[in-house]
Image 1 (cartoon, each protein chain N blue to C red):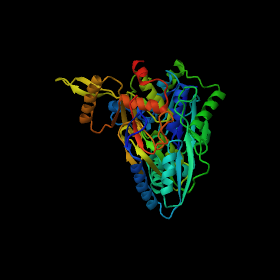
Image 2 (cartoon, helix red, strand yellow):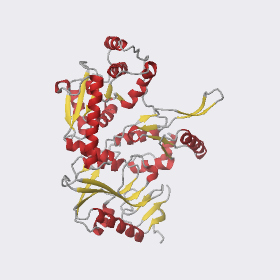
Image 3 (cartoon, each protein chain N blue to C red):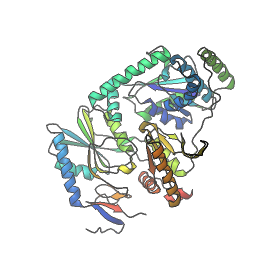
Image 4 (cartoon, rainbow over the protein chains, first blue to last red):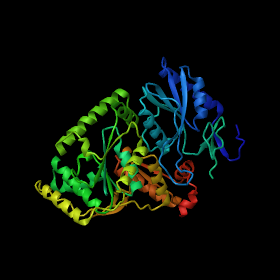
Length: 178
Length: 320
């Protein structure tokens, strides 16, 4: 398959490969949470596509909710401190929670969110990611479910963007340098 | 006001608050690792450091540092340090057991059962250490300037409350304590230390980070954004020695992240220089296999900058 956009260098995982892998991971999650209700929490905006695809394949009862964190550089151009800019609509006390990310890179965002969510009294909390780029990992976090481990390249598609573009691609692609 | 104490129950993450407040107030941060390194000199000099001497030596270090400007200290048993000193603004963090268990689950990746055990263990250990060093385990509420519930306030909110409290007291300037007051306090401390046969080391030179490259500053800001504790170039590792045992080559990683026991080296140089640095890192890993080091190359930094939104291009950073 040849990508239509000239800025895309190559396709890393085709749409079929992505769907197949999500299917497999969904089966693992369904088996682990069998007999229980699961709340998927997605991090806006990147995880939306993955969370939706994952949720449709789960066989356990699923609730979904979303949150967003503040950007590193605020509109005034100054770095701030990470905070929840869009919080969950409902509490998670006593629930089985699975945080769903599009990509785990340094692990800083996941670390912050796991700490934040854990303080809200869930029964359990897990982490699931579409992509895992271990080469840049700094924060030591445990990833319970991952679809793909990827090389140290800038990738787009399936929710991952470059300047807000390419999120809607059904495949994972490597962007050309510069 | 020049001395701010941040302490808390296990699982309340007082160091996160201290780490966040230090740059905001332009105070110097003194945390456990840094202090232990300084006290190491005293330990070598005196071999065994009696538990009861620890608070005195720590106080000696803190007061000397406070002469250079405002300090925040976040140390085990810090709530009991410098007792009766009115210049210390004491913040103590508390939370329900459930909330602190959650913190352990998140921070350590523990199950709820394991987190409960770990919390219990840390509480007992901290109490035992406080008993040995300070002769007490319970904190009297009246000795605290400000007590905050971390279940109600997250770290940025705690920081905002502390800043507001300092403003309200008109006590937020980062000026150091006066020379006369310092001399008087040190005299009293050293008199007590003399009973243990301990002479504290000489004047300590504080080192504030002066970044050698803009990418390092951006990386530091990124760590601050996520409230990741860091130290800048805290240690050099000798790599080669001459025949007389003198160090002829050493390597100093840019950052140390104590929470992850991880050194981070940022590299934005040309490929030829990168090769040289890679050789050094390879040597470092061979000589010090227990050291964890992560190298970030120009491309990694470029992607981080792209991801986190700095407007400057890597080229601009490189040539800045």
